[in-house]
Image (cartoon, rainbow, N blue to C red; front, side, top):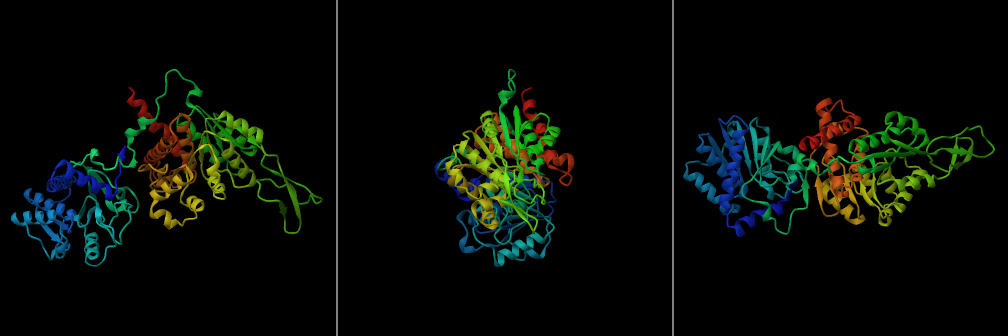
Length: 534
């Protein structure tokens, strides 16, 4: 697990290290500069001519120190100061003076030359305003250069808190992050400005956190060890029973994919509760699944039978061909079958391909009212829930929601722009309000229980394909069935889903991937757990 900090948390850690531990700010600055120089050399870029662009704050002080250290290595360095003289911090004044003592002068006409490397030390993590005027001109000029670009801590123009771009931002090839990666390194669109991000320790450790451990984090491959090991003496019941309430007429694939993913993630038994029309497809695609079906069709009543029999999911009180209208009668609600299936299960996933007719609506309401175990709601389950999200206040289940941006818009009545402006806060606030776990799906999926926030870094754009979300539902259900706590299952499920997508991309390419490829790679990813046991 890796903690992700915002600007304020990083500043607290920095000041705590200086004031309570007693490590001088200039020492931390020196360590930061050494890290930048080391990574610049390690990148193997052409160092024939380097420009270091410095601002007024401590990020600029880091830049002056970088220039001096490069000069000591025999690199031809030009330093540009683009900040405000009156706003320079004490440390930055000191570092500029040291440069001058070493014979390194600042240049006022630096834009008239060409460079092989440009080091961005203009703003750092403290920026909180739109970039305009001279600063915007300098950054735009930097981006137009063919030089290899290195950002000190974070590219200038990127919000460390949200990844927002403040008008313009340096497009770095390499970013050297100090102590911890910040949210702006991870979240879009800021992450696209960072290039390769390398985190370097500079002496600010985890015990410097003021007010407790940060509640935002991400996973690495070592966190797959959180999945329980398979026991030598076990049976299918040991690994849990997943019930998937999924599929409708013409949408059997969603049920198939979710069920396959639940099995691939380690669950012992998977049962699909679906309309009768899907039985043959599911049993052919996945004979390992148990299939329980119900009638979803409707019967015409009335004098005129000329319209014929209407089949399909329920969607109204009558049927008309434009000239004639007759009433329809619903098949009976499958209360007994649903009650038995719920009692059988250890976890329920509901929604993939379910449809939004009245039968589906009643099934969802029944599950929310009666179920007491972990419950994952996705896709059409979310669309139905959006009609009455207050149902979440009444349920006794441990609920995980997995909305994409469009579904979140319907659940919250927020605009797309409002949601994307702060994904973390959107997920955190919704989870807190309704007492659920919210896995808000985007290029950087975030998972929150109202307090903790997991930010996912696995996955790729090849996963932007129909059925990918159905796979995620199955993965989370599979982990829940193995008695993983709900928040951990949601976060690790998102991470595992992304890793499987990365493996599928490597095998198929992002262009050739389909959702089934993701499911097929889950087992390949989980092989790492077996390999660590031997």
